[in-house]
Length: 59
Image (cartoon, rainbow, N blue to C red; front, side, top):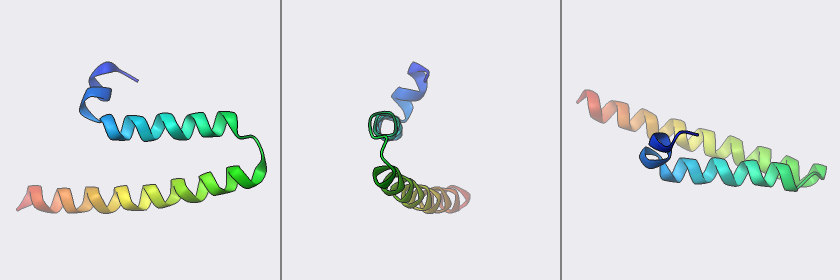
């Protein structure tokens, strides 16, 4: 990732790094399934945040 992106989105960068490390270091299926569920939850919450942000920006 670019340095500029990391500076603008430090939390998202850390979450991405954490998920990547977990996928790389946890090969067993149950851990992988848990990570997929967590990833889906994160995507849902991120979509909610983006929706509210867009709504606020539009006024």
